Image (cartoon, rainbow, N blue to C red; front, top):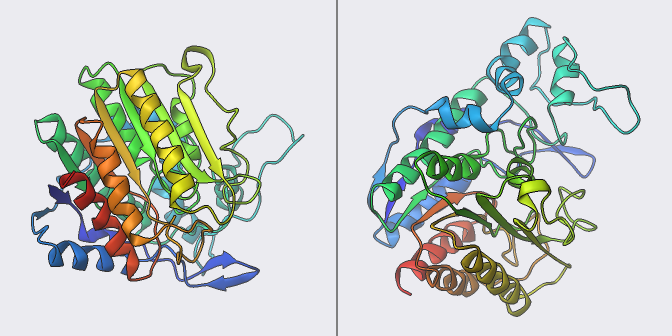
Length: 343
């Protein structure tokens, strides 16, 4: 299985994240990738390829053009205002405000396009975001070209990025872009399976009214876990997309037995849908020691999950999402890939 990865991810390294009332070193930081790369090498996944430049065509089909323009120019606008620190949104359009329109001032504009305040933008963020999506695109091309599976080691991640919102460390929705590329090439039915601990709210937002992409997400219950406001089991799609979304929210302390039941239910729905290609939002933050989750999966659980996914026998693109800066993030990520390959 080939891995696609860009060193440009290092250009995005905010020094501050709002967490628990403090400004802390972000949980989503470059060392996450180092753990995964090291484990890939240890396990003989030596075929790591730098992707070509990003193709904006599928991105523009999914993300609002004003939002993309904001991402491209946010840092220079922030600097033009004379702000010395990193761009962290602080003002948000909330319930019962007037018909929402983006402000001209970058401080207000940032809040308009943000879903949360933990994600900062820095001088290198936009370049890193493009390189991350380029890795997802390269992995999709590999699979569309005949490979059974490929792995995109994306950083920043993407599954919280909605059509016109960034946050949860995400800016462009890499998994959605990969799915869209399959659709653009004539694949009639594509499935996105999100096994990250946090609900893939952005992916759901993008495909919620469509019938060509089935979306399933296993995650912490929104009453208990970020992003809090989406991911309930009764969110099933709308219009043409009715019954094309399946959410499996679970409570604190969930261990593999219960989680695996949800995974098998999601895989059954994907099979019933008749998916012809699969995109996996590969978050491993369901691990018991992850610093920002409350599931209790063991490292061995991810081997089993990979084998369960392989049973679908679909062309599969794995897109890296969450799993934070602890050594086990490398073990758990590669366990999914090995479980898939050895099934």
